Image (cartoon, rainbow, N blue to C red; front, side):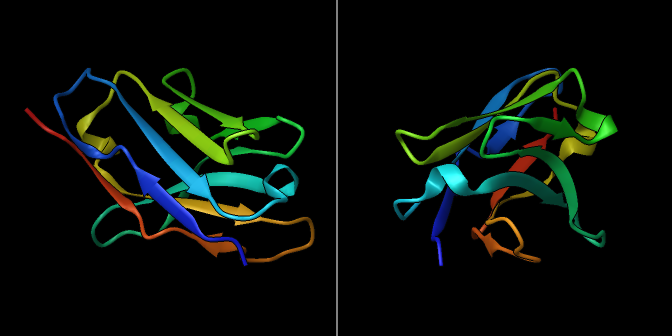
Length: 117
């Protein structure tokens, strides 16, 4: 099972930017579909962005045009560049890794993102 460690969260003002990173263990990182999810207090965990092993991406409507997901297979790392941040982006952000056919995959411990003035 892959181990995931997120970093890069913090406090940022509305309109600001942050870049989250998720470092994965193991030697088959390129086979994983990687996803960023977020969970605000009292709400369910929702998909923010996803990138396949081949580099295909998809985004939640609420972040399209503001967030960019990317991966560096040589570094076993996936990134989430978050721009034009809004207070409603405040949440704990989780990294997820799934092999083809897996239902749930592996999760990181999460990193807090707070957007506030």
